[in-house]
Length: 334
Image (cartoon, rainbow, N blue to C red):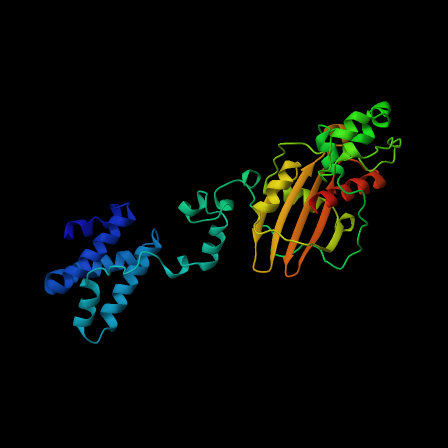
């Protein structure tokens, strides 16, 4: 050990110097007479060494401990004691409840494995943003009510293969064979139409409300839904509060499946203690504008009533036609 101390200046690795210092101090407590001079040399060189801050601080600590300790046995117990074993695997700063709550929003990702948010290991442009559906209705219920007219139009256009009557050829609308009208009950009222006299249908003008036709198989994820919803100002939303209902749904499926048959799809839904909530959407056929209708519906349970917030995104920019289509959509949902 003495030869190594004499060659201290030739040692380049700070870890070797630190180990030499520690070994010399420990050996001093077991063989004080032989090690006294060696300890003085290594302490002098280590305290003057500026190549490693840790080595310098350790040498000062040992020097002050040996000089100021009233009882040598106390200094010996500190220097020669075994390293303490950590009783826990995590430090206090790692026990971050806020981080755990954030990871729950990215549960099915690598974030739970790496124990950090996606922004810490994924470039911002590649991060998939998870959008949480708002707990409360995003717009106030106390808003002007948009008049609703022309019930059952979507059922008629659906039976006609999705072709809107206002955009069909004029002669096909104004001339309807009486035999077809007498045998087909399109609205499902169950009346015996064969026993009734069927009047000749009146010509349908260009201002007809029968102008809504929705695409089938449209898929919209949560992020796209939120982006489209946010892009439409609240001032352009149509709010229809507290429409009375004679009966209400017993589950979300009782609403989603019938609407799906008319190409109104569900992005998210849920049942609370006092109400059902639905986040719905539909897209017009490209021939009629291709715009989206984003719908947020709340069905209160006691008493049963329906509140709607509808935002049109894209499609027909004519205010009159857009209003007509929204009116039809409201009747379909009712």
